[in-house]
Amino acid sequence: MLKFDTDGNLLDAWGGPSDPGFLEENCREADGCFWPAREHGLFVDHNDFVYVSGNGQDNGARQQQGLATYPWAPSFGDDSHILKFTAEGEFIYQIGTAGMNGPDSENIDGGPNATPQPYLVADMSVDPASNRLYVADGYGNRRILIVDAETGQYIGHFGAYGQNPVVDDPGSDVADTDVGPWIADYQAGNMTPSFFRSPLHCAVVSQDGYLYACDRGNNRIQIFDLGAEEIGTPCANPNAEPGLCGFVGEFHVAPQTASGTAGTAALSTDPGESCLYVGDLANGTLYIVNRENRTELDRIGRAGRQAGEFHWLHALAVDSAGNVYTGEVDTGQRVQKFQRYASEICSGTGASEVGHYDMNR
Image 1: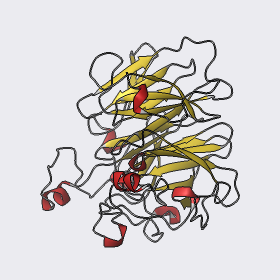
Image 2 (image 1 turned 180 degrees about the vertical axis):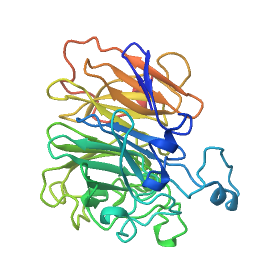
Image 3 (image 1 turned 180 degrees about the horizontal axis):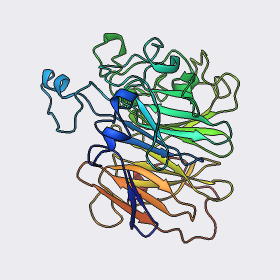
Image 4 (image 1 turned 90 degrees about the vertical axis):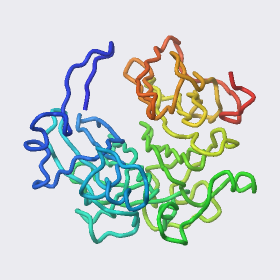
């Protein structure tokens, strides 16, 4: 993990095999700490605890499937766990058993603390009001997992529209989970698939108690009321009805794109968190959305590799001054900073269709 100041100067670094002695002293497998093969999710909570997840897959399994192998792939199986550390890198606990070879979202037998086994976790956030950890689980299980952030104890989980059971990864060998691509649903006019498509890529908690889930595979963001009594419990919402199972509403992001638009999100830091920033991996754009009416007010960037452009926009963060930071993967491999200059954040009504191609630059 690398820690920088707001000017981009490196302040501290710890974790992983590149930190001499870290795996032997701070994250020992004998203590139940398995460093992920490919780090993916990173979150720092209100108490400065650091949560890390990964989506690396085992070299041996990839070889058997005829896929490319990577030197960072694990030898213990796939990344199927979450690690918690102090800000200084002291290991606290691990959620899930490392080394699973596939999704099994309803299985509560194998994981620590009776937690249904995570698999290829994408992202997580902690709600300061309840100290609950909300996990976008993710590339595999495709559900939101709810855990007590202090103890790692399982609380609940839910799928799209807040309902259970959830559907496992369509990329697995289980025939009844083959749901096909998003674009087939879009062309058929089905805008409300009853499941998250892989990957469920973000879980962002607002100060007023809402969860924003990036359903990247379905080009949409779903919103949930974390104060709803039925959130995370067995619940049915077959008609995608707001007000049931904690589901509040949703909006699509460039739904005409094959897939991969609603990839990441972050909230502005004004008192009302009036802006929702949404990163569109497929189209290389960052949308500025009025959180109250879910309309697009503006957008930043386009596909490319120059300053202010994006190649595989994959991560978003906002600092206390309202500046926006973006991270790119694949061959983008950089962080960009966008400085806040407006006196107000998000107000008014913009375009009702977020990500419409007519507004491309």
